[in-house]
Length: 178
Image (cartoon, rainbow, N blue to C red):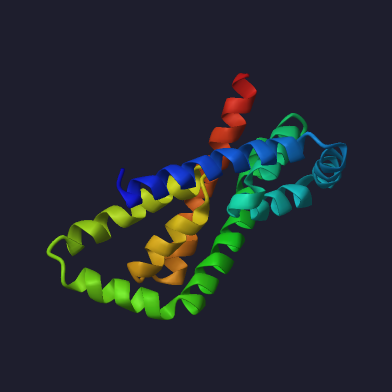
C-alpha cells in the first residue's frame, strides 16, 4: 500500500477514535453539568455554543447545547445568535491562520497563479467552504481555503454567518423532526 494511503487510513482511524472519546466525555456527569449550565443561561449560552461550534474539538458539546436549547427557546432568535457566535469564532480562526501561515499562503497563492484552473477554483471556493462551514465539520479547512484564495475578511464574515445560519437551522429542524 502507498504511504499516502496509509496516512489517510491512519488519520481516519484517529478521527473515529477521537469521536468515540468525545462521545464518552459527553456522557460524563461533569460534562453534562457544564452543558446544562451553559444551556441554562439561555441566549448567551447559545452565543457561547455558537463560538464552540466553530472549533473541531468542541463541536459535539455545542451540538448538545443547541439540542437542549431547541426545546425551550425561540429558534428565530437562536439561529442568528448562535450563527453570530460561530462567525466570531471563524473570524478568530481566519485571522490566526492568516498570521500563522503567511508564508504557506503566499506559496499556495503562487502555486495557484501558475495553474490554468484558478478561475474555476475561485468560483468553487465559496460554495465548497460554505458547505463545510454550515456542517459540523471542522471549520479550519474552510478557513484555510478562504485564506489561500485571498478572500476579504468582510466577505468571509458574511459567508460564515449565512452558512452558520443554515447549519444551525438544519440542526434545529432535524431535532424538531425527531
